[in-house]
Image (cartoon, rainbow over all chains, first blue to last red; front, side):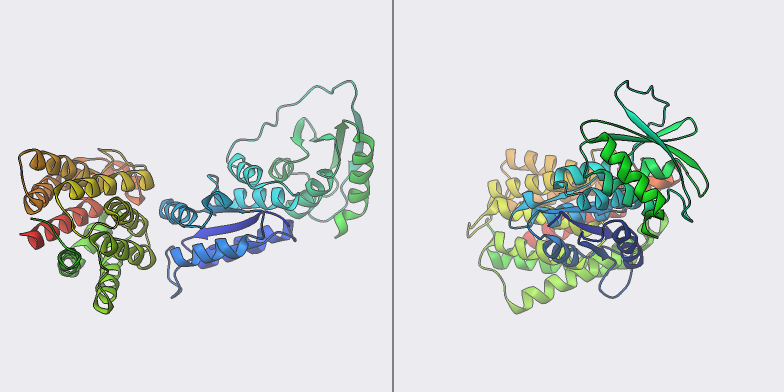
Length: 223
Length: 209
């Protein structure tokens, strides 16, 4: 089971397309679109948002994301009206990036607070400053052979895999470094086919994490 | 003078008629600074409220307002649905199961409605929203109550103050909602939400006479 996600948008197409996109990175998470009015026009449908929120909850709660002001109000009102309002939370983050970040966090088994925080953090600028290598870390260099490089799906696969290890992992391309647990940070590196990335890990399972990362890169992320 | 559930239902029907009458005006106001759907949405919501009242009028004033709230939330859409829905819902909760609406209860309900709108929309005075009509309206109702006014006097004072408050949005730069994207270009336009709030209060005041 995992936290469910509801995408509240004025547009049915926007919500559906985003749910489809986010599901690519989180195959086991229930991600439900709640966009537009029942007649297909632009707007937010309170009843549909409530129904989607109830359906998305498999026991671990729900995180709702929204596009514009009145979608936020509708989402908040829907949460207030639930039998247990603490089961759902409205995340204050950018809709697209936030939905991807939330979906990956939910896939990794995080709780609804952490999933909502992942969505909110997606709106913040990533810290890509070069960092000094800690003394006890291990590092490998890997060349990307897959077609899209470290783009959305491969980045999500990497984050999901790394989340299973007790290790802090960073990925470096040139003089830019990204947190190996953030899909958006990894994507913002812009690593493409043929680029050589340096993966560094520290912690009890550092070497196992690096081995797994090498396996993924060598196997073209299963593409 | 106190109002029963039937009195409150009659006031709500009067409000629905006023919304229908001013539908085009609200659309025009919203088209200037928003997406133009305020009049249409509100009219659709209040038409649904009237249909619900036609099939059954709840037993208490609080019950009537709750019916208004849930119907508006489901039918209006846009920002007005959750905002008016929250206002009527909080007002209804304040009234509880009381059989009649008297002056202290009306004041409580008006205050709770305003607080609900502000909690939902996060708007403050001067943002050029319905809050600019509602804040002076509640203050005027409080003053009228202090002067010994009845329900009709309170609502009339509130409606007068809401008219003035709504007019004040013409000179304001919107800081909430879609109009905020226009910034300075929205100056010179009456906020449609403030206008509809003033219209609703006027309809309630006329019905209470």
